[in-house]
Length: 177
Image (cartoon, rainbow, N blue to C red; front, side):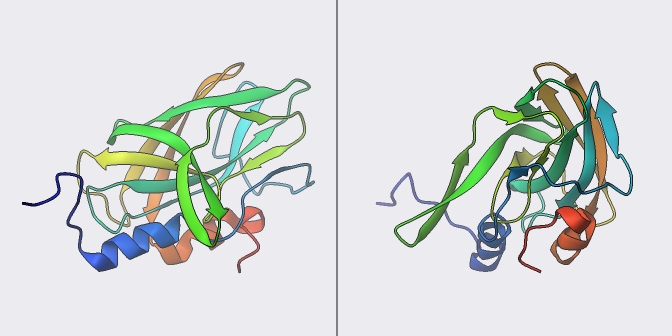
């Protein structure tokens, strides 16, 4: 009898998804990195860089990376994410322990005044669950971020290849270049 908790996935797409979520570091910092452009903003919070790599399985889970900047004088907190393109969404953190890498919900994330909250491969990332339609490079995806002070911040991102992620994050990319 087949174990009801086991899943059958093609090995290559699963390996690609795990790689997208499990190498490098993402941090909140006080770096004085100047963004090339603001992609979207609400209140004092702006999306200053982002990457939405196409998932290995067209309608499976999808990792999305954003960098948020707080230009205000008070902290704000990222409390949730959603997208009409997916059945659910949350912010995940990659954790390494005893030589094993895993991911799970990150919980609310503070963005201090003058700081950036960086998401990138191997660290913090938005996980969109069960895409409702296939997504491929060249498409666009709407992501909605919920913040305690700024409210809802909506950003439309182009879907790119995984190879374009670090270029899209620019100076905010993890040190894995």
